[in-house]
Image 1 (cartoon, one colour):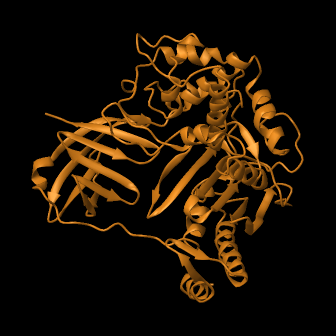
Image 2 (tube, helix red, strand yellow; image 1 turned 135 degrees about the horizontal axis):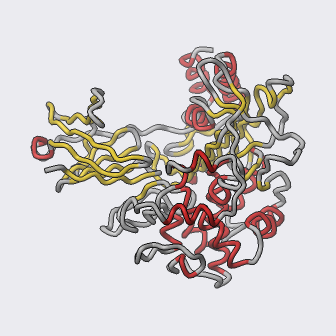
Image 3 (cartoon, helix red, strand yellow; image 1 turned 135 degrees about the vertical axis):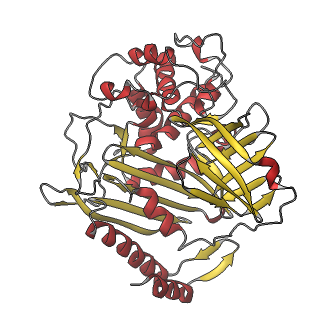
Length: 453
Protein backbone atom coordinates (compact mmCIF):
# COMPACT_ATOMS: atom_id res chain seq x y z
CA UNK A 1 0.00 0.00 0.00
CA UNK A 2 1.33 3.45 -0.85
CA UNK A 3 2.13 5.62 2.15
CA UNK A 4 -0.35 8.30 1.08
CA UNK A 5 -3.17 5.76 0.98
CA UNK A 6 -2.23 4.39 4.37
CA UNK A 7 -2.14 7.87 5.89
CA UNK A 8 -5.64 8.55 4.54
CA UNK A 9 -6.84 5.33 6.17
CA UNK A 10 -5.17 6.25 9.44
CA UNK A 11 -6.70 9.72 9.34
CA UNK A 12 -10.17 8.28 8.91
CA UNK A 13 -9.80 5.85 11.81
CA UNK A 14 -8.09 8.08 14.35
CA UNK A 15 -9.56 10.71 16.64
CA UNK A 16 -7.41 13.22 18.44
CA UNK A 17 -7.77 12.92 22.21
CA UNK A 18 -4.99 15.28 23.31
CA UNK A 19 -2.04 17.24 22.01
CA UNK A 20 0.60 15.08 20.28
CA UNK A 21 -1.52 11.92 20.47
CA UNK A 22 -3.75 9.86 18.23
CA UNK A 23 -6.00 7.37 19.96
CA UNK A 24 -6.01 4.04 18.07
CA UNK A 25 -9.20 2.17 17.33
CA UNK A 26 -9.49 -1.48 16.29
CA UNK A 27 -9.35 -0.35 12.68
CA UNK A 28 -6.16 1.60 13.38
CA UNK A 29 -4.48 -1.43 14.90
CA UNK A 30 -5.14 -3.20 11.61
CA UNK A 31 -3.78 -0.22 9.68
CA UNK A 32 -0.74 -0.12 11.95
CA UNK A 33 -0.08 -3.79 11.28
CA UNK A 34 -0.47 -3.24 7.55
CA UNK A 35 2.04 -0.41 7.73
CA UNK A 36 4.52 -2.53 9.71
CA UNK A 37 4.01 -5.45 7.32
CA UNK A 38 4.84 -3.19 4.40
CA UNK A 39 7.99 -1.86 6.07
CA UNK A 40 9.29 -5.28 6.94
CA UNK A 41 8.34 -6.84 3.61
CA UNK A 42 10.27 -4.15 1.74
CA UNK A 43 13.31 -4.65 3.96
CA UNK A 44 13.17 -8.43 3.65
CA UNK A 45 12.66 -8.35 -0.12
CA UNK A 46 15.67 -6.08 -0.55
CA UNK A 47 17.74 -8.26 1.84
CA UNK A 48 18.33 -5.35 4.20
CA UNK A 49 17.46 -7.66 7.13
CA UNK A 50 17.11 -11.35 7.86
CA UNK A 51 14.28 -10.81 10.31
CA UNK A 52 13.01 -8.99 13.37
CA UNK A 53 10.31 -8.44 15.92
CA UNK A 54 8.16 -5.40 16.74
CA UNK A 55 6.03 -4.62 19.79
CA UNK A 56 3.84 -1.53 20.24
CA UNK A 57 2.08 -1.07 23.57
CA UNK A 58 -0.04 1.86 24.75
CA UNK A 59 -2.06 2.48 27.91
CA UNK A 60 -1.97 -1.15 28.99
CA UNK A 61 -2.90 -2.56 25.58
CA UNK A 62 -0.70 -4.21 22.99
CA UNK A 63 -1.42 -2.62 19.60
CA UNK A 64 1.04 -4.70 17.63
CA UNK A 65 3.28 -7.67 18.36
CA UNK A 66 4.69 -9.56 15.45
CA UNK A 67 7.78 -11.35 14.15
CA UNK A 68 9.08 -11.21 10.60
CA UNK A 69 11.60 -12.98 8.41
CA UNK A 70 13.92 -15.74 9.51
CA UNK A 71 15.90 -16.61 12.63
CA UNK A 72 18.27 -18.69 10.49
CA UNK A 73 18.82 -18.04 6.82
CA UNK A 74 20.90 -21.19 6.42
CA UNK A 75 18.16 -23.45 7.81
CA UNK A 76 15.26 -21.28 6.60
CA UNK A 77 13.78 -21.14 10.10
CA UNK A 78 10.99 -18.57 10.52
CA UNK A 79 11.44 -16.02 13.30
CA UNK A 80 9.76 -17.37 16.47
CA UNK A 81 7.03 -15.28 18.07
CA UNK A 82 9.19 -14.60 21.12
CA UNK A 83 12.66 -14.82 19.61
CA UNK A 84 15.78 -13.99 21.62
CA UNK A 85 18.07 -11.25 20.30
CA UNK A 86 21.30 -9.67 21.44
CA UNK A 87 20.29 -6.16 22.51
CA UNK A 88 23.67 -4.39 22.54
CA UNK A 89 23.71 -1.03 24.28
CA UNK A 90 20.15 -1.32 25.58
CA UNK A 91 22.13 -3.20 28.26
CA UNK A 92 23.32 0.19 29.57
CA UNK A 93 20.00 1.09 31.19
CA UNK A 94 20.13 -2.16 33.19
CA UNK A 95 23.64 -1.24 34.33
CA UNK A 96 22.43 2.23 35.31
CA UNK A 97 19.53 0.78 37.32
CA UNK A 98 21.87 -1.70 39.02
CA UNK A 99 24.20 1.13 40.10
CA UNK A 100 21.24 3.08 41.52
CA UNK A 101 20.14 0.03 43.50
CA UNK A 102 23.60 -0.03 45.07
CA UNK A 103 23.35 3.70 45.79
CA UNK A 104 20.00 3.10 47.53
CA UNK A 105 21.63 0.31 49.57
CA UNK A 106 24.41 2.78 50.53
CA UNK A 107 27.05 0.58 48.93
CA UNK A 108 28.39 3.50 46.90
CA UNK A 109 27.68 7.11 45.94
CA UNK A 110 27.32 8.69 42.52
CA UNK A 111 29.88 11.28 43.59
CA UNK A 112 32.50 8.67 44.48
CA UNK A 113 35.74 8.71 42.53
CA UNK A 114 35.58 5.40 40.69
CA UNK A 115 39.21 4.68 41.58
CA UNK A 116 38.01 4.01 45.12
CA UNK A 117 36.81 0.69 43.72
CA UNK A 118 39.23 -0.08 40.88
CA UNK A 119 42.87 0.50 40.13
CA UNK A 120 43.13 2.93 37.23
CA UNK A 121 45.63 5.69 36.53
CA UNK A 122 43.58 8.84 35.79
CA UNK A 123 46.74 10.95 35.83
CA UNK A 124 45.46 13.00 38.73
CA UNK A 125 41.88 13.50 37.52
CA UNK A 126 38.82 12.79 39.65
CA UNK A 127 36.17 10.91 37.70
CA UNK A 128 32.89 10.21 39.46
CA UNK A 129 30.58 7.24 38.97
CA UNK A 130 28.01 9.78 37.80
CA UNK A 131 30.36 10.87 34.98
CA UNK A 132 30.82 7.27 33.91
CA UNK A 133 27.05 6.89 33.65
CA UNK A 134 26.48 9.92 31.42
CA UNK A 135 29.56 9.60 29.18
CA UNK A 136 31.30 12.73 30.47
CA UNK A 137 34.39 11.03 31.96
CA UNK A 138 36.74 11.77 29.06
CA UNK A 139 38.26 8.27 29.18
CA UNK A 140 38.97 6.77 25.75
CA UNK A 141 36.22 4.43 24.57
CA UNK A 142 37.64 0.96 23.91
CA UNK A 143 35.50 0.35 20.83
CA UNK A 144 37.29 3.25 19.14
CA UNK A 145 40.89 2.35 20.00
CA UNK A 146 43.26 0.67 17.55
CA UNK A 147 43.84 -2.38 19.76
CA UNK A 148 40.17 -3.35 19.97
CA UNK A 149 40.20 -5.25 16.67
CA UNK A 150 42.75 -7.71 18.04
CA UNK A 151 40.88 -8.05 21.35
CA UNK A 152 37.53 -8.93 19.74
CA UNK A 153 38.06 -12.74 19.49
CA UNK A 154 40.16 -13.16 22.63
CA UNK A 155 39.20 -14.29 26.12
CA UNK A 156 41.48 -12.26 28.39
CA UNK A 157 41.17 -11.01 31.97
CA UNK A 158 39.00 -7.91 31.92
CA UNK A 159 41.53 -5.79 33.76
CA UNK A 160 43.84 -6.20 30.75
CA UNK A 161 41.55 -3.74 28.96
CA UNK A 162 41.96 -1.23 31.79
CA UNK A 163 45.73 -1.41 31.44
CA UNK A 164 45.40 -0.55 27.74
CA UNK A 165 43.00 2.31 28.42
CA UNK A 166 45.38 3.81 30.98
CA UNK A 167 47.91 4.42 28.21
CA UNK A 168 45.47 6.46 26.11
CA UNK A 169 45.10 10.22 26.20
CA UNK A 170 41.90 11.60 27.69
CA UNK A 171 39.48 12.79 25.02
CA UNK A 172 38.62 15.82 27.16
CA UNK A 173 38.74 16.84 30.81
CA UNK A 174 36.00 15.19 32.93
CA UNK A 175 32.70 17.04 32.64
CA UNK A 176 33.78 19.23 29.70
CA UNK A 177 31.92 17.32 26.95
CA UNK A 178 29.86 14.18 26.30
CA UNK A 179 31.26 11.52 23.98
CA UNK A 180 29.49 8.14 23.97
CA UNK A 181 31.74 5.79 25.89
CA UNK A 182 31.62 2.01 26.16
CA UNK A 183 34.68 1.97 28.45
CA UNK A 184 32.69 3.79 31.12
CA UNK A 185 30.00 1.09 31.24
CA UNK A 186 32.64 -1.65 31.14
CA UNK A 187 34.14 -0.03 34.25
CA UNK A 188 30.69 0.22 35.88
CA UNK A 189 30.26 -3.54 35.46
CA UNK A 190 33.56 -4.13 37.26
CA UNK A 191 32.45 -1.79 40.06
CA UNK A 192 29.19 -3.72 40.46
CA UNK A 193 31.16 -6.96 40.81
CA UNK A 194 33.62 -5.39 43.26
CA UNK A 195 30.91 -3.99 45.52
CA UNK A 196 28.55 -6.99 45.48
CA UNK A 197 31.05 -9.85 45.35
CA UNK A 198 28.91 -11.34 42.56
CA UNK A 199 29.29 -11.46 38.81
CA UNK A 200 27.50 -8.79 36.81
CA UNK A 201 25.20 -11.48 35.43
CA UNK A 202 24.37 -12.85 38.89
CA UNK A 203 23.58 -9.45 40.35
CA UNK A 204 21.25 -8.46 37.50
CA UNK A 205 19.54 -11.83 37.64
CA UNK A 206 18.91 -11.58 41.40
CA UNK A 207 18.03 -7.89 41.57
CA UNK A 208 16.17 -7.31 38.29
CA UNK A 209 15.43 -10.32 36.06
CA UNK A 210 13.98 -12.70 38.66
CA UNK A 211 11.91 -10.13 40.59
CA UNK A 212 10.32 -8.93 37.35
CA UNK A 213 9.82 -12.42 35.92
CA UNK A 214 12.10 -11.78 32.94
CA UNK A 215 12.83 -15.41 32.18
CA UNK A 216 14.15 -14.74 28.68
CA UNK A 217 16.71 -12.07 29.57
CA UNK A 218 20.27 -13.09 30.36
CA UNK A 219 23.96 -12.49 29.66
CA UNK A 220 24.66 -13.54 26.08
CA UNK A 221 26.98 -16.45 25.33
CA UNK A 222 28.89 -17.49 22.23
CA UNK A 223 28.77 -21.12 23.37
CA UNK A 224 25.43 -21.91 25.03
CA UNK A 225 22.61 -23.40 23.01
CA UNK A 226 19.50 -21.31 23.73
CA UNK A 227 16.04 -22.18 22.42
CA UNK A 228 14.51 -19.48 20.18
CA UNK A 229 17.80 -17.57 19.92
CA UNK A 230 18.06 -15.88 16.53
CA UNK A 231 21.24 -16.07 14.46
CA UNK A 232 22.85 -12.73 13.71
CA UNK A 233 23.83 -11.34 10.31
CA UNK A 234 25.71 -8.34 8.95
CA UNK A 235 24.50 -6.46 5.89
CA UNK A 236 26.67 -6.01 2.81
CA UNK A 237 25.74 -4.82 -0.70
CA UNK A 238 26.58 -8.32 -1.94
CA UNK A 239 24.09 -9.91 0.47
CA UNK A 240 23.72 -10.76 4.14
CA UNK A 241 26.68 -12.41 5.82
CA UNK A 242 27.19 -14.24 9.08
CA UNK A 243 27.95 -11.73 11.81
CA UNK A 244 31.47 -10.80 12.83
CA UNK A 245 32.66 -12.82 15.82
CA UNK A 246 32.84 -10.89 19.08
CA UNK A 247 33.67 -12.45 22.43
CA UNK A 248 31.07 -11.42 25.01
CA UNK A 249 33.92 -10.88 27.41
CA UNK A 250 34.11 -7.33 26.00
CA UNK A 251 30.66 -5.78 25.48
CA UNK A 252 29.94 -6.81 29.09
CA UNK A 253 27.97 -4.21 31.10
CA UNK A 254 27.97 -1.93 28.05
CA UNK A 255 26.23 -4.35 25.68
CA UNK A 256 26.14 -8.10 26.39
CA UNK A 257 22.53 -8.82 27.36
CA UNK A 258 20.08 -10.90 25.35
CA UNK A 259 16.31 -10.46 25.56
CA UNK A 260 12.96 -10.53 23.76
CA UNK A 261 10.39 -7.90 22.88
CA UNK A 262 8.08 -9.22 25.62
CA UNK A 263 10.74 -9.15 28.31
CA UNK A 264 11.84 -5.67 27.29
CA UNK A 265 8.26 -4.47 27.60
CA UNK A 266 8.14 -6.01 31.08
CA UNK A 267 11.37 -4.18 31.92
CA UNK A 268 10.29 -0.83 30.49
CA UNK A 269 6.86 -0.78 32.10
CA UNK A 270 8.31 -1.80 35.47
CA UNK A 271 10.99 0.87 35.18
CA UNK A 272 8.72 3.72 34.11
CA UNK A 273 5.77 2.78 36.31
CA UNK A 274 7.71 2.70 39.59
CA UNK A 275 7.86 -1.06 40.11
CA UNK A 276 11.66 -1.31 40.21
CA UNK A 277 13.18 1.92 41.54
CA UNK A 278 12.01 4.52 44.02
CA UNK A 279 10.87 7.85 42.58
CA UNK A 280 14.16 9.46 43.63
CA UNK A 281 16.22 6.72 41.97
CA UNK A 282 14.04 6.78 38.86
CA UNK A 283 14.44 10.53 38.44
CA UNK A 284 18.20 10.13 38.79
CA UNK A 285 18.18 7.50 36.04
CA UNK A 286 16.18 9.51 33.50
CA UNK A 287 17.25 13.10 34.29
CA UNK A 288 20.13 14.50 32.22
CA UNK A 289 22.57 16.74 34.05
CA UNK A 290 24.88 19.50 32.88
CA UNK A 291 28.45 19.94 31.75
CA UNK A 292 30.94 21.90 33.85
CA UNK A 293 29.94 25.13 32.09
CA UNK A 294 26.24 24.61 32.87
CA UNK A 295 25.28 23.36 29.40
CA UNK A 296 22.25 21.07 29.64
CA UNK A 297 22.55 17.52 28.32
CA UNK A 298 19.93 15.18 26.87
CA UNK A 299 21.54 11.90 27.97
CA UNK A 300 21.05 10.59 31.51
CA UNK A 301 22.10 7.15 32.83
CA UNK A 302 21.83 4.60 30.04
CA UNK A 303 18.83 6.41 28.51
CA UNK A 304 18.34 9.59 26.52
CA UNK A 305 15.58 12.00 27.55
CA UNK A 306 14.62 14.74 25.10
CA UNK A 307 11.78 16.17 23.02
CA UNK A 308 11.52 14.54 19.62
CA UNK A 309 9.59 17.05 17.49
CA UNK A 310 7.41 18.00 20.46
CA UNK A 311 7.12 14.54 22.04
CA UNK A 312 9.05 13.68 25.20
CA UNK A 313 11.06 10.53 24.45
CA UNK A 314 13.01 8.35 26.88
CA UNK A 315 14.91 5.87 24.78
CA UNK A 316 18.02 3.97 23.85
CA UNK A 317 19.23 1.90 20.94
CA UNK A 318 21.67 -0.94 20.73
CA UNK A 319 24.07 -2.22 18.10
CA UNK A 320 26.34 -5.26 18.20
CA UNK A 321 27.59 -7.50 15.37
CA UNK A 322 24.52 -9.19 13.87
CA UNK A 323 21.85 -7.28 15.80
CA UNK A 324 20.30 -3.81 16.06
CA UNK A 325 17.77 -2.77 18.71
CA UNK A 326 15.59 0.23 19.50
CA UNK A 327 13.47 0.93 22.60
CA UNK A 328 11.37 4.08 23.00
CA UNK A 329 8.97 5.28 25.68
CA UNK A 330 6.78 8.35 25.26
CA UNK A 331 5.49 9.39 28.72
CA UNK A 332 2.89 11.89 27.49
CA UNK A 333 1.16 9.22 25.43
CA UNK A 334 2.07 6.22 27.64
CA UNK A 335 3.43 4.60 24.50
CA UNK A 336 6.15 1.93 24.24
CA UNK A 337 7.74 0.84 20.96
CA UNK A 338 10.35 -1.94 20.84
CA UNK A 339 12.03 -3.36 17.76
CA UNK A 340 14.72 -6.05 17.57
CA UNK A 341 16.42 -7.15 14.35
CA UNK A 342 18.93 -9.92 13.73
CA UNK A 343 20.86 -7.89 11.19
CA UNK A 344 23.39 -5.08 11.59
CA UNK A 345 22.83 -2.79 8.63
CA UNK A 346 20.85 0.20 7.33
CA UNK A 347 17.46 -1.12 8.46
CA UNK A 348 17.90 -1.79 12.16
CA UNK A 349 15.46 -1.38 15.03
CA UNK A 350 15.59 2.43 14.81
CA UNK A 351 14.56 2.38 11.14
CA UNK A 352 11.30 0.57 11.91
CA UNK A 353 10.53 2.38 15.16
CA UNK A 354 11.13 5.81 13.63
CA UNK A 355 8.67 5.06 10.85
CA UNK A 356 6.01 3.45 13.05
CA UNK A 357 6.07 6.11 15.79
CA UNK A 358 4.90 8.84 13.43
CA UNK A 359 1.80 6.81 12.63
CA UNK A 360 0.81 7.29 16.29
CA UNK A 361 2.26 10.68 17.23
CA UNK A 362 1.85 14.25 16.05
CA UNK A 363 5.08 15.76 14.73
CA UNK A 364 5.73 19.38 15.60
CA UNK A 365 8.21 20.85 13.16
CA UNK A 366 10.73 23.36 14.46
CA UNK A 367 9.94 26.95 13.53
CA UNK A 368 12.70 29.22 12.33
CA UNK A 369 13.11 32.80 13.46
CA UNK A 370 15.02 35.70 11.94
CA UNK A 371 18.75 35.83 12.57
CA UNK A 372 19.48 38.38 15.29
CA UNK A 373 23.20 38.79 14.48
CA UNK A 374 25.50 38.96 11.48
CA UNK A 375 26.45 35.34 10.63
CA UNK A 376 29.73 36.52 9.15
CA UNK A 377 30.85 36.96 12.77
CA UNK A 378 30.98 33.19 13.21
CA UNK A 379 32.62 32.25 9.91
CA UNK A 380 35.76 30.18 10.22
CA UNK A 381 37.20 26.73 10.74
CA UNK A 382 36.55 24.92 14.02
CA UNK A 383 38.12 21.66 15.18
CA UNK A 384 37.89 19.26 18.08
CA UNK A 385 37.25 15.73 19.32
CA UNK A 386 34.14 13.81 18.33
CA UNK A 387 33.35 10.12 18.72
CA UNK A 388 36.21 8.08 17.33
CA UNK A 389 38.14 10.92 15.69
CA UNK A 390 39.00 14.57 15.60
CA UNK A 391 37.05 16.64 13.11
CA UNK A 392 37.10 20.08 11.59
CA UNK A 393 34.14 22.07 10.30
CA UNK A 394 34.12 25.16 8.14
CA UNK A 395 31.26 27.58 8.81
CA UNK A 396 30.23 30.06 6.11
CA UNK A 397 27.44 32.63 6.02
CA UNK A 398 24.83 32.71 3.24
CA UNK A 399 21.52 34.55 2.95
CA UNK A 400 19.53 33.98 6.17
CA UNK A 401 21.46 30.78 6.93
CA UNK A 402 24.89 29.20 7.25
CA UNK A 403 26.64 26.26 5.64
CA UNK A 404 28.84 23.73 7.40
CA UNK A 405 31.40 21.50 5.71
CA UNK A 406 33.14 18.74 7.68
CA UNK A 407 36.77 17.80 7.08
CA UNK A 408 36.84 19.65 3.73
CA UNK A 409 34.97 16.75 2.12
CA UNK A 410 33.16 18.93 -0.40
CA UNK A 411 29.70 18.25 1.09
CA UNK A 412 28.12 21.41 2.46
CA UNK A 413 25.04 21.20 4.66
CA UNK A 414 22.80 24.23 5.04
CA UNK A 415 21.49 25.13 8.49
CA UNK A 416 18.42 27.31 8.00
CA UNK A 417 16.23 26.56 11.01
CA UNK A 418 17.42 29.19 13.46
CA UNK A 419 15.74 29.06 16.89
CA UNK A 420 17.52 31.96 18.58
CA UNK A 421 20.51 32.32 20.92
CA UNK A 422 23.01 31.46 18.18
CA UNK A 423 21.38 28.01 17.87
CA UNK A 424 20.16 26.05 14.84
CA UNK A 425 18.19 22.82 14.65
CA UNK A 426 19.19 20.06 12.23
CA UNK A 427 16.54 17.44 12.84
CA UNK A 428 16.80 16.82 16.59
CA UNK A 429 20.44 17.93 16.64
CA UNK A 430 21.15 21.35 18.13
CA UNK A 431 24.06 23.40 16.79
CA UNK A 432 25.25 26.39 18.85
CA UNK A 433 27.91 28.64 17.31
CA UNK A 434 29.29 31.61 19.23
CA UNK A 435 32.26 32.80 21.30
CA UNK A 436 34.69 30.86 19.14
CA UNK A 437 32.92 27.53 19.73
CA UNK A 438 30.71 25.09 17.84
CA UNK A 439 28.68 23.00 20.29
CA UNK A 440 26.80 20.16 18.65
CA UNK A 441 24.31 18.18 20.73
CA UNK A 442 23.34 14.93 19.00
CA UNK A 443 21.70 13.51 22.18
CA UNK A 444 24.22 10.64 22.42
CA UNK A 445 27.08 13.10 22.06
CA UNK A 446 27.77 16.74 22.92
CA UNK A 447 30.82 17.79 20.93
CA UNK A 448 32.74 21.03 21.37
CA UNK A 449 34.89 22.33 18.51
CA UNK A 450 37.10 25.41 18.95
CA UNK A 451 37.78 28.06 16.34
CA UNK A 452 41.21 27.90 14.78
CA UNK A 453 43.30 31.06 14.67
